[in-house]
Length: 478
Ligand code: MN
Image (tube, rainbow, N blue to C red; front, side, top):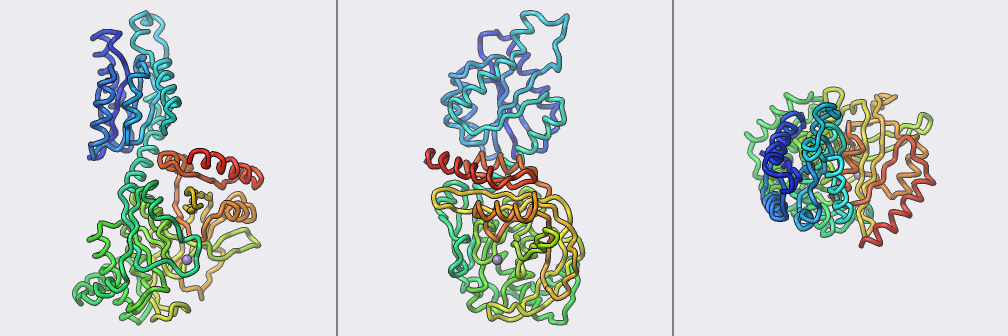
């Protein structure tokens, strides 16, 4: 089971009795907090050796996702220096205290020796700053729900980072020709984010598609029938998508991959561009990026892996009058964001020169969401996050045979687009519902990548200044 380790700072100065109390109280704090993922007690740091020992084990324990430290008493910082420098897991510094107030009668010198987080944690904060170490600091009483929520959110971020660091992305074919934003340094992405991005020839996929049996196709069609409605008589087109889906998923499983890309320009030997196939794979939790966009494929997988409602998305066209964006793609929008029952339809694509592909058509659900893009600036990655409110589309658009989502970007269409273009955001994004910005901040902090947030108070001039400052910051830290 994946857990977070609770490590308590103290020292030998106060004697055995006090340390026994520290352990007892630490266990009580852990038991009281209702966090999303389990926290386990891992001991008291009293010496340089204790700190090193715990970190050594944390680094090598696959089930340890991160450590949470709290200094119940004063824990001299120098004993933590080597351990923290060697720590390879995300670190949270929890600043709390056993008692919620000062007990008037009970407070004496013994009490003072035991309950010292008010200054013990300041020593601990100093060493984090002095080492310039990435850490999440949470301040709050351990009985407060707000404290549990902050810890839980960070735990989810750590889970997402752990998914990122293990992620394999398969590219079926290359990127769409001449497109700039889908390019990027795959080696740098592996170094910074952990992604292993590799190509599988489309020929291999075609071989696998040709091996799929009628029985496998029949089983897949039964699955489609339970999840979607059929609005076509072209069953062979659906059967081809079923074959493509089974073949892609076999390859992804063999390669232990969590995301994939393809492009309509590289479908040699295939009959259709995978539409329904890709959509059903996204619904099963795989990340996807169109036109070879491996960055958006990976980002989409990361959110899906932590159970967020997310889809590959593209800014399609505008309703300039009302300030809305219509989001879609030529086929591949994930049905987990559908507000109605997705319909399987078969229509011509207009580009790519292949047979009419079967795809799911539906309307995306309403609610607060974010569109997220990761771009490669050559010397760093920039994560751009746009706050949006998804609404029901204002028109039925009966002749547009693709899944569609409509949203109102913050603060308004003009400023949002101005900021997005200034920051260099791509036309492909991951649309994620109900995602607090603190999640993205912590995610960027742990992975040490730039974050640009466009929200209701964003101002273009301030954003430009921020981008200039970020440029200096990242150049200096190279
Ligand atoms: Mn596209």
